[in-house]
Image (tube, rainbow, N blue to C red; front, side, top):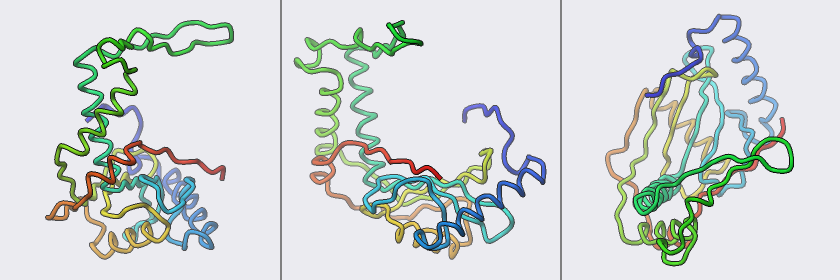
Length: 216
């Protein structure tokens, strides 16, 4: 685990923890008409999100969860991308340098890492995209529904969840919170059987989407 350079939530002064708790509680209540009154997120939730950051209150004390949920499909696509990029690194290491330009500051330049003659006439990005699709279609992945807590977060208790749903919607997040509480807010959970998935459908839409942030 990487070394943290901040004070974990439960080690902070009581006044700090109380202020943070009240802030999240107020945001959950303020967004209740749209989100249902159980959580708050500053991500635009359109029902097809592959991942989401959100906050919700614990039922065991005056603290809250700083949560990230990912769909199993998103996790599989992440893994395929990492494998594809690692293979591109074996062909030619990826190097980035920063250079000055006409305006203030620097720009990132990765042109030295491009070698079309080594990547079948493609750019590295194009080659990785093609390889990622091939990996998704040809290589099996075993992913389980999981929940893991992390007490090293500065802001609340960290919570990472992998969910067996096609997309993350307001309804799915509310269902997850209800199920998490029904399980007793466990430190760790892993569903025994792996997630079933369709390699062809993941390959057709292999990109890793980003989320639009809302100003609150």
